[in-house]
Length: 161
Ligand code: FES
Ligand code: FES
Image 1 (cartoon, rainbow, N blue to C red):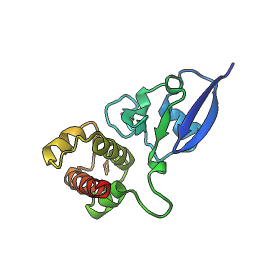
Image 2: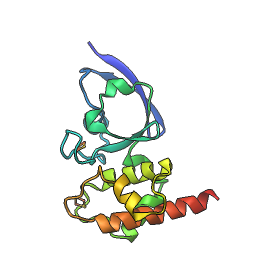
Image 3: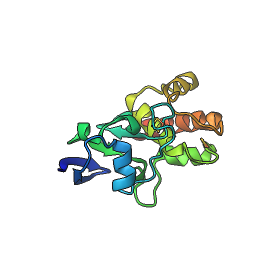
Image 4: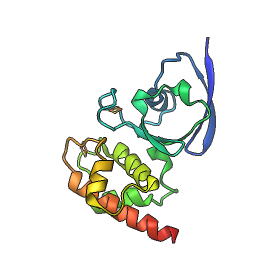
C-alpha cells in the first residue's frame, strides 16, 4: 500500500507515493528525489547538516517524517540560486571562506537563510553564533561562517530598502 503526499519542493509541486510512512523528509529528498545537496550527518538531530526550510522555517529534515509535511513548501539548497546567480548567502560563504570540506555547508547556508528571514541575526556576531549553534562544523570554519552571515544579512537588508 502506498501513501500519496503532495509537496512543493523548490517551487515545483510534486505528488509522491510513499511506500513507507516512516520515511524521513531527508531520505525522501536524497533517495527518492535525488536532491543530495541536503546532507546526512548524524541522522539524529544533532549536527544540522540536513537543515531545510519548511514553510519558511528551519528544520532538521532527519527528524521530520515526510508524511507529516503533506502540503508543505520545502526549500533546499538546490532551490537557492537563480540560474547562474548565487543567493547572497551562498556568495558570502565563498567570499568569507565559510567552509573547508564543505560537508556541513548546505545545512549552514539554509540555516543562515532561515536565521536572516527570522530577523534573528541582528547584525550581531553573538546573535549569529547563537542562531547558528545547531549547525556543527567539524572543520571549525565558524569565524568565516559568522562573517558570511553578517555580510549576507546586510546585503539582504539593503536590497529590501
Ligand atoms: Fe539531521 Fe544531523 S543529519 S541533524
Ligand atoms: Fe567541513 Fe564544515 S566545512 S564540516
